[in-house]
Length: 384
Picture (spheres, rainbow, N blue to C red):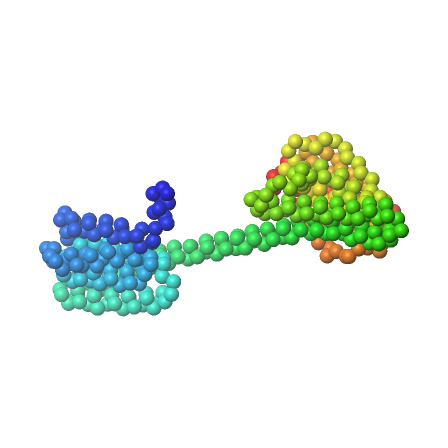
C-alpha cells in the first residue's frame, strides 16, 4: 500500500502523536524558552527538570486528544498550571487551546459537566497566580478565560457540523436504499406478473385440451417457453443487481429490450390473446433507458389485457422517432372479463414513474368505444 493509505488506516493515536512530539521538540529548543503563554506575568525562570516534566505533560497527551479527550485536556491543563506557577512560560502552552478544541469537537458525553469542571478548576489557578504577586487584574484573568472558551466553542461547532453531515449522509443512504428497493420491486412486478399471468392463462386453457393431444402439446410448450423467458428476465435483473452473477444466459436475454417486444407479442398470442403488432421507423443507435421503458410499457399493457380483457382484440404499435419512442397498446373490449389473479394496481403507476423520470408523457384509460388504451411518449438517449 502507498504511504497515504497506510497513514489513513493507522490508529488515530498514531496519527495524533506527531503533533505532540513536534510541539515537545519546539518547546525544548533554547531559543523558545520563556517565549510562550504568560498568564499572570510571573518572572521567567530558567528551564530545569520540572520544566521538562511540565512541557511533556502539555505536549504528549495530545496523542490521545481524539480517543480520550477529557484525559488529554486534564493532563494538558495540569502541565499548563505547573508551567505558569513555576514561571517557565514555555511554548508548550499552545497545547491548551488545541486540547480544548479537540475536547469540544470529540467529546460525546457529559459535555456540560466537563466544561463546568474545568471552569471551576481555573479559579484556584487564577487565585494562586494573583496571590503570588503577578500583578494581573481580575479582569485580565476573566479575559483569558473567555479566550480559552473560544476554542471549546469552535470545537463544539465542528462537532455539530460533523453530526449534521453524518445525519445528511444517513438520510441520503436511506433514501437511496428505498429508491433501489422500489426499483427492484417494480422490475420484479413487471417480470413476474407478466410471465406468471401468461403461464396461468396457458395452463388453464390446457385443462380443456385433453381430447386434442396436438393442441395440448402446443399449450404445454407455450407454458414451458414462458417459464424460460421468466427465468431469462430474472437472470437479467440479477445481472443488473450483481454484475458478477454471470452473463452467459442466452442470446435473447442480451438483446436490446425493444427488440424483444415481438417475443412478448408471440407469447401473448400463445396465451389466447389476438394481438396485432406494428412497428414503424428504425431504432436509434443509442436510446439510453428508453428501450427498457418501452418494453415495460408493452409488457404491462399486455399483462393487463390478459387479465382483464382476455380474448379481446389487442393492438400494439411502436414508433421510433429521431429522439423518442412512442408506444400505444389498446384493446377493443370484445373479450371476456373473467380474469386471472388480480393485480395490486401498482403496474400502471410504476410505468408512469418510469416515463416521468425520462421526461416523457404517459396516459392510460378507457376508450370511448369500449376497451382500454395505454400510450407513452419516451424521450430517447437519456442514460437515467
